[in-house]
Amino acid sequence: EKPLLTVKNLAFSFQTYAGEVQAVRGVSFQLEKGETLGIVGESGCGKSVTAKSIVRLNPEEPSGKVKHGEILFDGKNIVELTEKEMQKIRAREIRMIFQDPMTSLNPTMTVGKQIEEGILKSGVTSKDEAKKIAIEALEMAGIPSPEERYRQFPHEFSGGMRQRAMIALAMAVNPKLLIADEPTTALDVTTQAQILNLIKKIQKQYDTAIVMITHDLGVVSNIADKIAVMYAGKVVEYGEAEDIFEYASHPYTWGIMQSIPPEDISNKEPLKPILGTPPDLLNPPKGCAFAARCPYAMKVCRCYDAPGFGVEGNEHKVWCWLYDERAKQMQATVNPIT
Ligand code: SF4
Ligand code: MG
Image 1 (cartoon, rainbow, N blue to C red):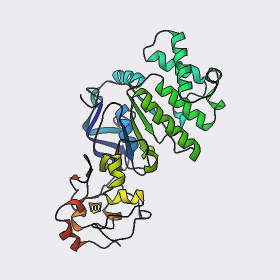
Image 2 (image 1 turned 135 degrees about the vertical axis):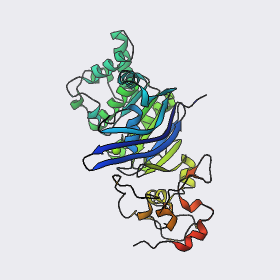
Image 3 (image 1 turned 30 degrees about the horizontal axis):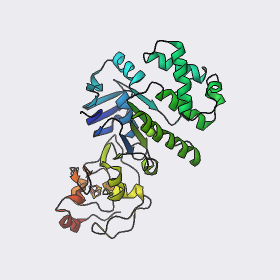
Image 4 (image 1 turned 180 degrees about the vertical axis):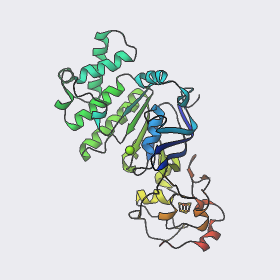
């Protein structure tokens, strides 16, 4: 069976007055039906742009542009579809939820009507049937008294309930893929845990594939099957979640996990926190984009991008020169961090 989603060497740029910002610079991953991929990285690393490319919600030409790559969803290349075909896909096959539910919810319409409208757009023809599904969706999303809530406006919902309503809106059409961009970032810790549990439940119940975007590795630790760690528009480490947690291999991953690098790499202090800022993607640096912040940077890092090296685990890969067989020798020429 073919994967549900294959992103192949995707690059996306924005045109600005200052020049071309290379937000995504060659990202690849695959997702099977019912699987969850966590895309993790700090703000500006290209994770949201990658996610929005899948539903084509980035600005299109002339301000935004897919430079190269393919996004194959259920056999169709998203990059080449017409806007009309895309609208169909967004209505029933790929739904996206955001940090701010008001991005998805219309403040002037009752929550129930909005969900119902979405269901009707997705191909259900009977209004009564749509209403029934909408109330079921509210209930599934853990909203008490769904029939009453159906008639209320978004402002009558609390933050956490609004998040649930947005999830109900997305899931009511039973999409094949749910893209969640920082869905819990604005919530308090308790509500955050509840929403994550809800997403986990949905995944089990509906066998939906999920792409979960987050700056917080902890958020995906319980949900993700696979994790892609992104830095400066590229995936720097990719693998099954268990392997990422057990055998984290990229210096940036060690930094965001605040973990101690394995001893055979170095006996340096843990990276806590990562100092410095990500590079300007208007003029991405030559070589490894993390070099300016990396305590292990070698001369080669500043000249050439590392290829992907296989490391411990299943399909676990890391894009870092430390895993080149010659690295030990190159360590002799480590550039001191200034
Ligand atoms: Fe650090 Fe070099 Fe690895 Fe980049 S390639 S993360 S600079 S060791
Ligand atoms: Mg973002």
